[in-house]
Amino acid sequence: MLKTRVISGVFLIALIAAMNLLGGPVMCCILFLIALQGLFEFYRAVGIYKEEGKHSVLECLGYAGTAVYYLAAVMISDQRLLYLMLIICIVLVAMLAAYVFAFPKFEGALVMKAFFGFMYVPVMLSFIFLTRSMQRGEYLVWLIYIVSWICDTFAYLTGSLFGKRKLAPILSPHKSVEGAIGGIVGTVIISVIFSFLFLRAYDLRSAGNIMVFVLLGVVGGFVSQVGDLAASAFKRNHDVKDYGKIIPGHGGVLDRFDSVIFTAPMIYFLAALFFGI
Image 1: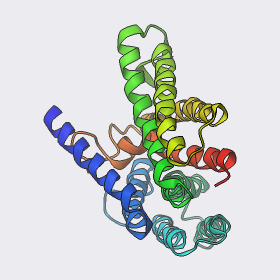
Image 2: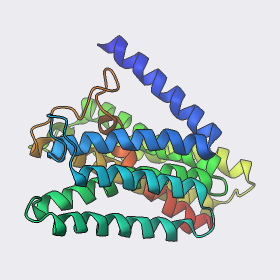
Image 3: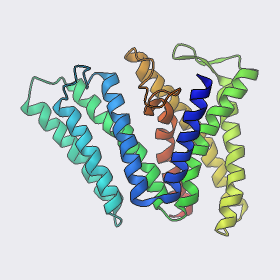
């Protein structure tokens, strides 16, 4: 099991590294496939997709919306966020139209789950591509994974050594308050180390800019843990152990990218706010 997990992890890191280095349409296509699989896993977990193999209109609209959204992301550069917001609104209207004209076939809660899944997986993951596409994005995009996975590693190590108080005892009994704090502290340290490489590359060295990376580490470390716990909460609510088996030893896309989903938008908007890019 450990060997399988390590091999899968190495392959996943290699794929992400290649994706980040290439950027552009190649990165967008890979992210689209990851988002599509993640959305399928979410729809299956919450009951929108049934194991009988019959796909509902709501499910198909989610997949179609994902395809149009990622096509627009890679094809449009000027006012990209404006067009992406338009597509999000169109997907919502389309799902509501299916709800209205097929009434009472779908329950309102199912429509909300379908749209939430679209926002939660494809839209949130797209900020990896949007971060890579901004100026200096070839550096900043790595911070998404650093913040997410370094925080998880430090939280595990700190919690194993010093954990006493439970962070979310019902939801995740092995996570501790000490581990959560250790995860954030570790993320800040690695983010500051990363900042020296980034600031040197763009000649932006100053104490103020370094403090931006401290903030990125704090906010990103906190948000990544919220994302991890949120994914666990969805699984608990629907009696799901793992979202899938597509990544041997790790589970599904959502099992591996649960914290990245939350971290990517935060890194994008904080970088845009502080660096004006």
